[in-house]
Amino acid sequence: MTSRIGLPVSRTLAFSTLTAMMLLPAYAEMPAQLPTAAQTDPEANHVMEGFPPPPDKIVRFGDGSSSRFPQTRWAFNHIRELVPTANVSRGEGPVAALPRAERNLDGIAITTLDGKQITFGDVPALTYADGLLVLHKGQIVYEKYFGDGAADRPHIGFSATKSFVGTLASILVAQGKLDPAALVTKYIPELKDSAYADATVREVMDMTVGVKYSENYADPKAEVYDYARAGGMIPQRPDYQGPKTFYEFLVKLTKEGEHDQAFAYKTANAEVLAWIIKRVSNQSMADLLSSTIWSKLGAEHDAYFMVDSIGTESGGGGINTTLRDLARFGEMMRNKGRFNGQQIIPADAVADIEKGGDKAKFAKAGYQTLPGWSYRDMWWITNNDHGAYMARGIYGQSIYIDPKAEMVIVRYASHPRAANAFNDPVTLPAFAAVAKELMK
Image (cartoon, rainbow, N blue to C red; front, side, top):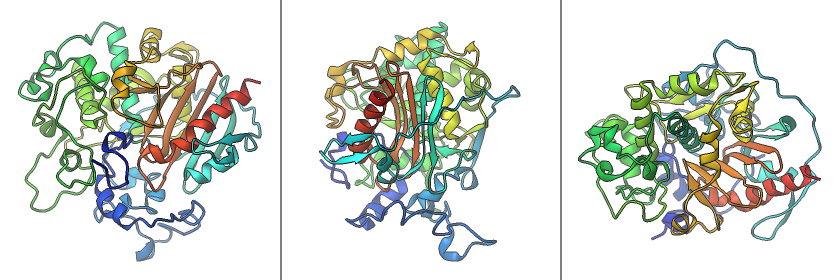
């Protein structure tokens, strides 16, 4: 079976749910020759400018325009103006400085996975980047913004959210508060009649659950659409009678196949894990992230989550942060949980992520651009000789952590194509080439 974008369904990387509505109509409308990043720049095209903006420049959630390219190039930088959100407080402490030691990296030569010769300076336009930042040994060596991206403007991270959720779960495991070998129902008895009745927490954390949940966007009956409607990620029709919250949706999921046989990327698992950690911590996701990490990170700005109709944060794709704060989070992970003069999260939690998951189970998913990779605690593990690992979100959202090169690269983007398979041929060799240059 193939998706509308021409990729095997098992290989349509890291789709998130906010964009579910756009995929059927928008891919049908997407021209073979895509307009360039420059041609779709929302500032150059005066999107949402004026009081009020002209009718043809307005972006809305309710009519689906916020989920259609090129309007997404504005919308991904302005989620809070479109839908309900929950704040993640940065606390009252001082901002943790990120020293600057700018270098001209634009000339670094890169050979893409499909054999093209480019430079690092070409990467932002090719990936429709809204912001790109490189840290080396904790110093900013490269920071640029494009389109409607800005240093003080939070951008949606889509499925990079899952890595935040996985990190919080890893912290609870390291603290002895969460047992990864326990059944999910130990913490969420409400799931006793669902696919998760006999699944373990570890199987949820590593996405090896056998659950009937399709992210095939070419199928209007796929469960991803039910999930998106339940969570308010897409508008509900006036006659909609389905689940109205994430919780109501999750309890209805049924089993398909056996658990722990293969890696299968399904956003529902992230929402189940989010439910578990909220139940264990007795805190909302926003409050837990704030108290555990964000208020200790020296972040410049509050973060925020998209929420459903009862204020439940989207653990599958709802985090929004500024790029520099995303870099601070990545630098904390690179330093084994230590940042801003303190051990923010247990080093054991980071070590569990870095060791990676089962490569044989991951290989069954068939990701052609990720040979030899694995998945652990909702992070993507390269298993390369640098020990690099990633948080990944559709449309090009990235946290790339390279411990050997002492490097963190973060990018927010609004690529016209959702699947990371369209970004990987440029992104993965580009990140590796920058690491090589910085290690000279």
